[in-house]
Amino acid sequence: MAVIHHTTLAPSKLELLTSWLPAQPWHLGDGREPELAKVGGFRLDDPEGEVGIEFMVVTDGSGDQPVTYQVLLSYRGAPLDGADHALVGTAEHGVLGRRWIYDGAHDLVVVGQLFALILGETKAQAQSVSDTPDPSVTGYSAEAGRTAAIESTTVNNGPHGTDLLVQVAETPGLRTRELTIQLRRVLQPNRGHETRALGHVTAGWLLPDGTKAQDMFAVLLDAASEPRS
Image (cartoon, rainbow, N blue to C red; front, side, top):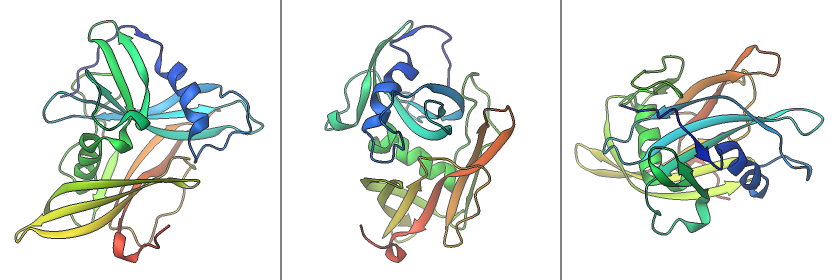
């Protein structure tokens, strides 16, 4: 279960994201430095207990209208091989020491646990409380009940978000199949459902006026039905 250490992190997550976010193709900023506030999120457990997994929601208030983003963060105690391009930054943790923080879309452990959440094989954990499930985060899948393991992932970042093309091996029979997990990087309150979806993850955050909003953070689609970019 996720263990939360209430301690220091230098630089802070928001400081790291302030530098990293404007370089992303799905960022909607106008050239101003982001003014970020954490407004929601949740965590997932790594079955091996090695990787911290956080889905963080931040709102940028620097522009004329606030924009809310979903960022996936992977916390590791050593560099992740072949992922230098996905490094958000490094920070000193008051308990765990140096942590390498990555965009979780490029971390197979994170993608695997997101897929498990969609399939109903794992539960979201509270963002700031140890060993506490977060029932407000829900996963749904028409694929529920199947056993599938991700063999590889291809990450496609674009102006509309991040698409994860995943190769999965299904049992019985170990049939290989291609699926797409669409990550909605820019969140919109109470957006309509995707009719082609095989599954999704829905979660919430707080709007600037303090009211609650929800959106689908991730949508599972059949890759064969998706246009290739």
